[in-house]
Image (cartoon, rainbow, N blue to C red):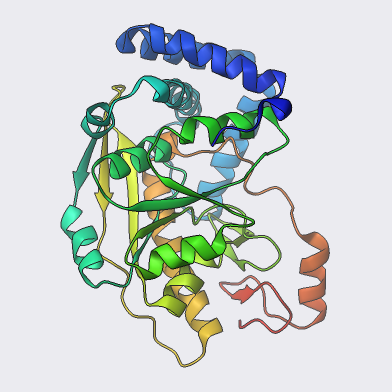
Length: 327
């Protein structure tokens, strides 16, 4: 939801003005212009281009895999794709319910319906692939009770703008800091809760190898689902060519997690999500959000405490982000 006028910064105001221009242009023209801008930026922003190239190359090298395309081509397509994703988000104020629905073709919708029929709520796990913002809006406008989180009154203008444009999606948004109870009540009433499982999980996340890097991932999808009985349905979308249309795949709900102790079950379920996300990202790297520097050193002091406590790390291990975590 949009921030109060008193805290709207110049970047927020500029993005709203750009949105008005995007909404006034024919959609095909706007998408073409956005793609052209993306390719120009790909050549002009040399430092970011180098960083993306090194990151992508390092990921495939560490995993012993060959990229599906030359790394230079992948980087170009990343810039092009996310320039178009930005233009699509900026057009949200103009979009109709039919417009949202028509832009995403759902595959495997029966898996979502089967999970909903269980009556205990569904957690949709969606990585930063394709266009997750448009995907969520399409699901909500198709009549599904979709809930998600937002961060209220972010200090930066970009964060404010994201919250503003998401307000057009028809997703029921909950404040990530103060709205946990509301989201939990919705889930227990059988609603759908969208979660992003590839973002940083903080000190209390699950530390494990993701794309060849030891990082923290959110414990929320596994923790919430195991404690409430909600089904976890993996979901991702991919752009169809260079069009403004997407295809989205709902996968079967994750199986029951073996084990007697909650910590080991949380780790096991998170591992399942990681292995699934890795395969999709490695197959379609040109539509993954490499701009977010997922692998820069984070939580170093906390990691040092974990090591001092004797928590097993790396070599295929995993642990909860506290000294009592399971390996």
